[in-house]
Image (cartoon, rainbow, N blue to C red; front, side):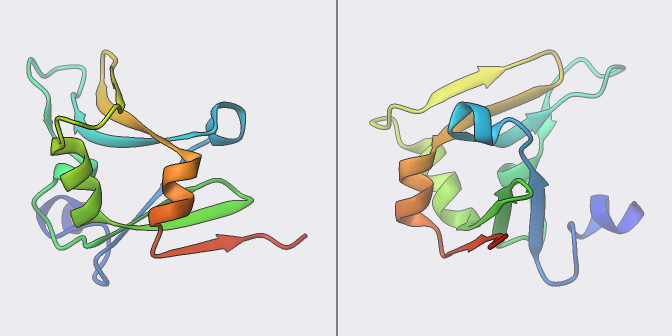
Length: 113
């Protein structure tokens, strides 16, 4: 856990996220802020963490999207984009539509069951 907070999710620079609602919503939730219950302010997380991550892998048990963290950050900062941003009590992020993930993914891995 200490390595995760000081260096990154993994030595390879890959962050992996499970999105349990993707199949139902058709959107991937890309987090960029988190707040622990005892904290007052949000702190950078996900694509906004200043760590060694350069790839952001997200999906469910059927499909995994490998996305560029740099591209996701640029997309978040694009004032022209029509992304839907969401803030909850503990998280800030945006919804990445499936069609855009399909178009911009570095790779897509599907479970061929």
